[in-house]
Image 1 (cartoon, chains in turn brown, red):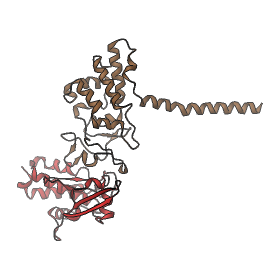
Image 2 (cartoon, chains in turn yellow, orange):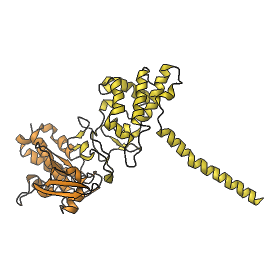
Image 3 (cartoon, rainbow over the protein chains, first blue to last red):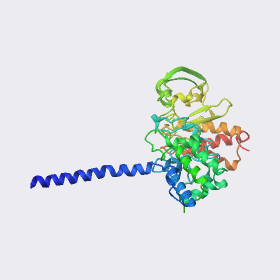
Image 4 (cartoon, rainbow over the protein chains, first blue to last red):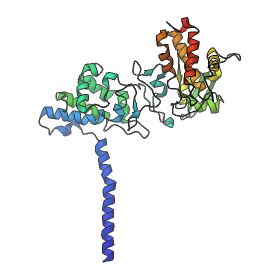
Length: 204
Length: 171
C-alpha cells in the first residue's frame, strides 16, 4: 500500500516536472517563430488576411531589437528590458548622435563581444518621425504607410527596407546573449510583401 | 590576431600583432605604458578613457577606448593626455583646468581634457553664437562623469578659454 502511494506521488511529481520544463519552451518557441505568409491562405477575406499578415509581422516590428532604435524620445533603448541607453547618448540632428558622441565611434562595423558592444557599419537611430516605441500595432501600421512618417518610402520601399537592409538584418543575428528578432529577415520581408499585395490593411 | 599600426601624439607605434579581443585601453596602458588614459567603468559610461582621434581632413573627435578594439585604430592618428603639453609647457586648456581647480582626484581629467580640446577644435572650424555657448559646452562634456563633482568647474574652465579668444570660437 505504501509502495503504491509512493509510486503515485513520484508519478505526479514527474508529471509536474515535465509540464514545468516543457511549458516555457513551448511559449518561447511561439514567441520566437514567425509564420509564413502561406499559412494565412485559409483566411478567405482578403482584408482580414492582410491585417493578419501585418499582425504577424508586428512580432518583429514591436521586438526590442527593432523598437530600441525606433525610440519615442531622443535616446535609444537597450536590452529586452528596453532601458535607456548608457552612456546617455542622444540622436542628434542626423540620427547618428551628437557631435561629441557619434554612434559609430563605439558601434564598430561588427559586434565587439569582449566589451559587449553591438556593431554594424550603419549603426544609427531611426528618425524621430519613425518612432515606434509605445505605439500600438495599428498605429505603427498607419505610420508605416505614411510617407511623411516612414522616411519617404513607398510600400515597396518599406518591404525592401525590412527584407534587405543590412542594419535591419542585424536584428536576426545580434550575437552575444541578445535575443534575435522572431523568424528570419526574409520571412519578415515576405510577410510585409504579402501584406502589401493584399491591400496593406491595418489591424484594428 | 590583427596587425596594428597607430600614431599616438605624433609618434608611430607598430606594426604590432594584437589579439582581436584586445581593447584600445589595454593596448595604451599595458602594451605602451601610456597610463594617462584611464580605465574607469569599462562600459564607455564615464569616458575617463576617451582619446582624441584625428581625421586626415583635419577634423577630430573623441572616442572611448575601453570598449573599442585596438585593431579598429589601425592606421589612425590619436592624441592622449600625454600629448597636450609641449616642451614641458601646459596647454591653455590644462592651465585653465588648474586655474579653476577643476579636478580633485584627477581620474576623469584626461577624458575631460580630450573632450574639451576636441570641442575647441570643432568650434574653431564652426563657430557658435555666444548665446549657444553654454549649451554647446554642456552637450560636449555631457557624457563625462566626475565623482568629485567638478562638472561646473570644468565647464567654467572651457568657457574661459573660449571667451578669451571670442573671434576664434564665437560668431
